[in-house]
Image (cartoon, rainbow, N blue to C red; front, top):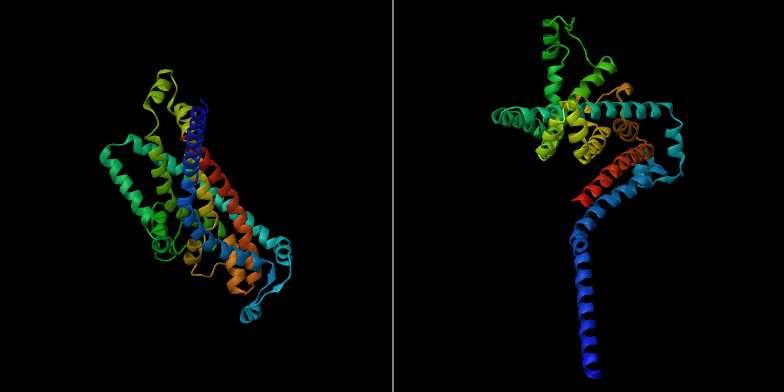
Length: 318
């Protein structure tokens, strides 16, 4: 009897150990697969980020650049930018510009996605093809096209508005006034961002169960009420992710403004990215530029946290 009991105990112990090893292997496998990519990304991102943060605490100008050695000054760079009224004007301008661009992008992209559900298959394919072409267009090419459209002498926008009797736009310089200039940049950014939002939202709308929509319509709900009470809650994770990504992308806009203004933007057109570039490479205050860039990273990190949180929640649901 004792030998039988010992055999059963040994067999049970082996099963427990086998189950434990299998469970640990099942848990560790995803991390083992992700580890090489995570290590490469960590090295690629960690070292430049370390140098950026390190430089933000140093006096680093042309003299230090030649010597390849900065002088440690603590938080003086941060104190300098936080006490600079120009910096806060740039921050406010960047936040306002980002808010307008993201809002218009989400509204227009959602409207186009809803339109794609209503049109015929041929029209849907044509619209989707046009969206993909806009989405795939290089930024520099898009900026050149828009610069030709709003050219003060030969711009098709000026000619069209004049012919429509909106006003006299002959030789009108859109960038002489920052308000109209940023209006052009807003249209350019939104135009380039709409395809991604529209196609993504359309893909989400196509997955909404028709039974829910039909039930709401039978109950007498109007189309707007159906969208607000049924569709929008189901697509909330998609909208949160799209909004977070749009904030990250629009907050760091640089190429569109820089190229459109021939690399000579005035201070009225400074966003945080351009202001950091100006401090670093135009007046050679690399430490101040690094401090501004770190503040930018913190702003975008906050938006990234929202994005990652929503991604994790979506993963839990699925």
